[in-house]
Image 1 (cartoon, rainbow, N blue to C red):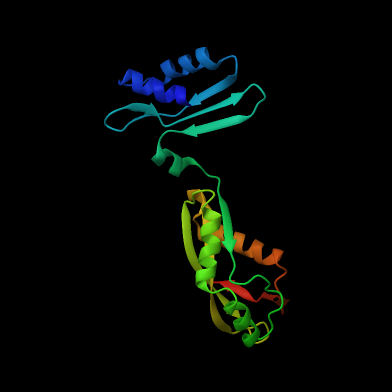
Image 2 (image 1 turned 135 degrees about the vertical axis):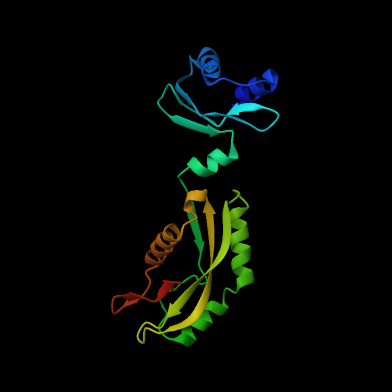
Length: 187
């Protein structure tokens, strides 16, 4: 999309969607098709379309945003990664065992793990959430546990998305289920 960037800088004037679309078709028509362009926005110095979407000749779709505000409001995909406070959670049966497992991965260790995951790709949201451990037999909340949540994409910053991903994560680790209740619950 260097072409659009240069087009905007070279023109240093208001950009018209139809004009830019024609330019893209003339320049890339042999390699791309079905160009769609967002509305034109201005940053007080330059005019540019909010986004460009197109398909290559093999029908792969590309969507490139030039406006951060537009990207944040319109991009609806996301990824969530969870850093759990323990490596093996299906062995929990008593508070003492849970405390021993939690002591193996204190917050500073969790932070190092989370930082190493986000080092490869900048995250949109990076936070520490609390899950409360419930005693599997007594069903009493007994311990707060720290879980890092890494989210790529603003749309993933919803309590429901995080709960769904956390629940999925717990199920993958074969969390002990007793009396139909999971041993961990999101606060």
